[in-house]
Length: 414
Ligand SMILES: Cc1cc2nc3c(=O)[nH]c(=O)nc-3n(C[C@H](O)[C@H](O)[C@H](O)COP(=O)(O)OP(=O)(O)OC[C@H]3O[C@@H](n4cnc5c(N)ncnc54)[C@H](O)[C@@H]3O)c2cc1C
Image 1 (cartoon, rainbow, N blue to C red):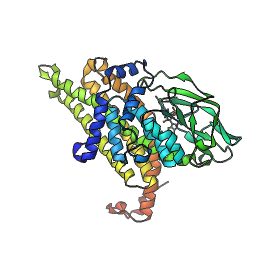
Image 2: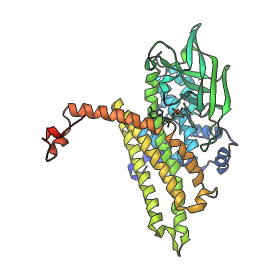
Image 3: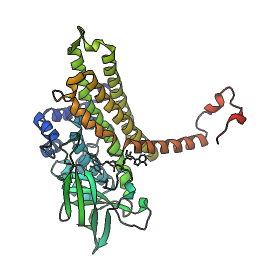
Image 4: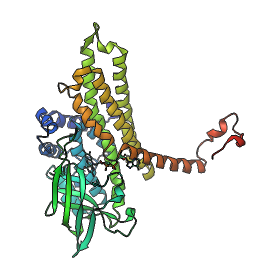
């Protein structure tokens, strides 16, 4: 975020995060990218020790009583280390804990939020199934009552932190006779008997997060680990989509920023035809486009964060986080693409980190809901909003401003 938008407290927080980011050894980044490290435990422990995770939650549960505007700033700064660092930072602290802070009991917050924010335990979020991620409400994971507890069975796919998490946030069908939106519940499932991670994915980028398939085989879940109301997993899902998509957007900016910084330095130093290549508009305009897209992305993320902080209506927030996720992730992929392009061949090699950033960022438009799904939601909410506003007579009738506006016989709608 731009300095002039930050008050002193936020600037101090930003500097705290930058300090954390500075002290991460480059070897860890390399080891994660090479799949030699499956999960950056020490990094999360250190972030927890510095009380940098979940800063928008109440102090009582381990946060700092801050807000979403502060959170997106933190996520951007963590993203500078690499997309996967922000992802593992975000999944437990900003997604799973968000659900428990908003929908959980005090006992659940005490057991699952506080230690996670201290960096002592880790969590994973289990939505996607082998049968599909976009059709979330088609979930086939089941939980049935047995002797007062729940017994949960099913499989979840591509779960970041799957092999390292101490507990999982899992959605499961609890009433197969109800329509999907009304028959799914959310559970906190401890790692224990019946939980297995038989498959670890080989990824194009974003390595080192331990993405795995997680199998739940007749796992006993205490009744007290139901999160929120029975059959109302949809309520948890709906609030979780805010950190899921807004957090993703914010961290994508941080992950793309170093690519532009590296390319800016490179194009200043590299010469062709007797001049620094930045003197060619073909080069500097690509750098300019990248700078514009980063600034536009940051402004959009900031606006959406502010809308959430100010309690904008749920429908509007749904549209804003969806369009922000789509715009920012696509813009930032463009930023990384431009950075590589202006560096020529060397940008494609491991001499510079741009190739890793390009690989990492490709995921951004796929996970936390594909960008096609973001368009689906945006279109749905946009049409509803337009209908509401126009039928309430809240907007000027722009159609009537055409010279031939009264030619009703020419207006055919099929
Ligand atoms: C590295 C990685 C990490 C991940 N981490 C997690 C995690 O921690 N937890 C978790 O729960 N999930 C995670 N995911 C899953 C991710 O969120 C899903 O992959 C994503 O939601 C898409 O689901 P899918 O892969 O099943 O694709 P599908 O749902 O099968 O979609 C395939 C294609 O069809 C399109 N499509 C589907 N339905 C529609 C529609 N109605 N309209 C238009 N287009 C449509 C999609 O946009 C996509 O292009 C991760 C994925 C990856 C790759």
